[in-house]
Image (cartoon, rainbow, N blue to C red):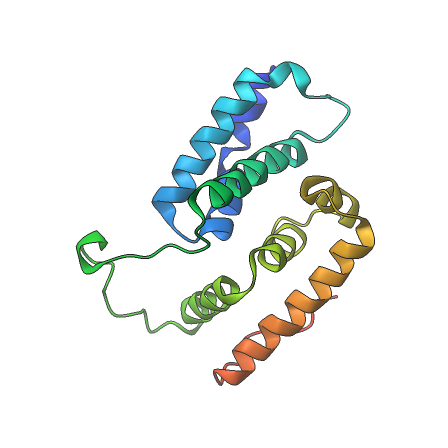
Length: 169
């Protein structure tokens, strides 16, 4: 399979990670587009011995961090004019969907370095070593951040009266 085909197969994963990083669908799509563009330009630097997804996550994360530094902003602010029709609709009554919304909101409250580690390990099921490569920190730091992120997430949900998390490992 050629590089472009592999790259296209990673787009859904890139979108999910980008959405977790920036919390806004439109910004996430822009971030993924920038990542794909950079990957196509710098594809000759990719080492096929490494997982493509890990390399792409590192590229996407670096673009995101560069954007934060350039903008000096860590969050997305929307005005009422920015809302898409139906975005202010009543939340669904289904408990599973509501739990996912609650967890998503709690994730957004975490610091970016905790949010990215918990998403990469918990959602993307990446190894600590791969996450360490993506984030550019030692494996021990990944483990520490993950532990603090899980504790913070649990505390946020407990403070809000939600018991939607359960121990998996």
